[in-house]
Each structure stands twice: as C-alpha cells, then as structure tokens.
Length: 148
Image (cartoon, rainbow, N blue to C red; front, side):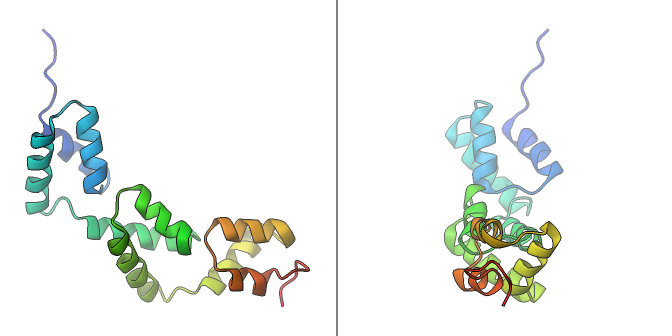
C-alpha cells in the first residue's frame, strides 16, 4: 500500500520544526508538494494564528545573524529579500538589529579584513560585495590599499 502524502499543515509544521521560515518559503515548499493555493493560504493563516509563522521574527533573527556574519547595506537587504521578507519589514529588522548589537559598519569591516588578511583591491571588492558603504571601504582600504 502506498504511503499517503502528509496534509499541508502537518508538512508545514515539520518544516518549521527545523528552523523558522517566512510565509514565502513555506508557501513555495507547500506548492512544490502539490498543495492547491487555497489550502496553502489556509495553512499559512492557521500557522500565523498559532504563532508558528512570523515574518517579523524571522527578519529580526536573520538580520542579527547576517550582521554578525559581516553583511551590510544592500547586500544584507538582498539576503532578507531572498527569503521572502518584505523590503519595509527587512529595513525595520536591520535597523533594530543594528541598534541591539551596537553594530558599526567600520568596526565590522575592519574585523573582517583582519580576520581574512585582505588588503588592497581584494579587500575593496570583498567589502563591496558584502554591502559596505563606499566611505567605509575608502577609509579602510583607500586607493593605495592601506588603512588610513
């Protein structure tokens, strides 16, 4: 006898057991398992009412994690967008996480460069890819590749 596929609520609960997910991530996972849109919408509403699904919580946690890992600016915003977090919610979460951590772009950039032993153009490219503002890159790397 073939094993019956789990219902949408059971599957979503199992997916959330491992790690918080956004509405968009859960909706996509349920869609991939063949659940119809109306069932997905009902499931997401039920999970939110139970407190299991909260994009604001996910945004805040991800912003904290990504700031600690050395992401900044537009790159950090893009990382939150990639998991389905609304741009305004992502911006609020980033601001709250920066305040909570007392995070400084300059201090984090300096730490990353020291940890990775990067200088010059490689350091500038790395910081740029991580979303650090140009003024931070210029201050730490400068055109000659040395800290000023």
